[in-house]
Image 1 (tube, rainbow, N blue to C red):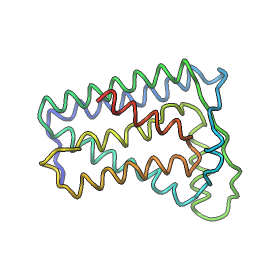
Image 2: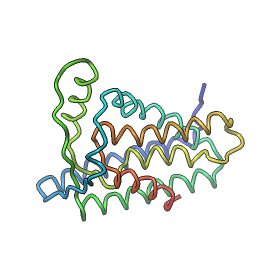
Image 3: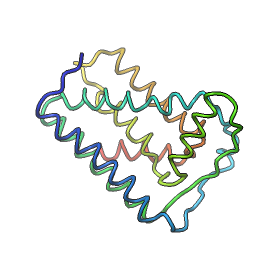
Image 4: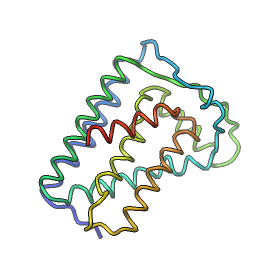
Length: 193
């Protein structure tokens, strides 16, 4: 069982709160602005695959576990990680306001549970705030925050890398993001870290 250290509570709460503020706040500010579709011809070749919605939504559990693991590290590591997390959201906010993006979502028949779940995601999450992908950014942070940490088992570090990559793929297969969004999220995480 993971126990949360007392000194870890503030960085965790702040990270979630600031992420929400950036995502929702930029959406409210730029709602009526022109949004650019940066979808490429390669993106149009990627099929919609309904089962990927389970990975797309399952990421929240992965994020929670890894952010708690990272918040349990030493003071220097915690400061470095959460400073990078904060900086990345400032950069995201700038992109969301200076280059608002969108994409074209597929028409999905309301057949079956997974299609219904995907339609629900579409109904609560507008096609905006796409570049860089926060889903990919946070997932990659979950990996790089424990990468090389010997106190974390090798299998879990490997699992975290694989899970981050699967989440990135799910953003494409659910048609929530395009390739440049994914690359932008991963690159931003690496630069800020």
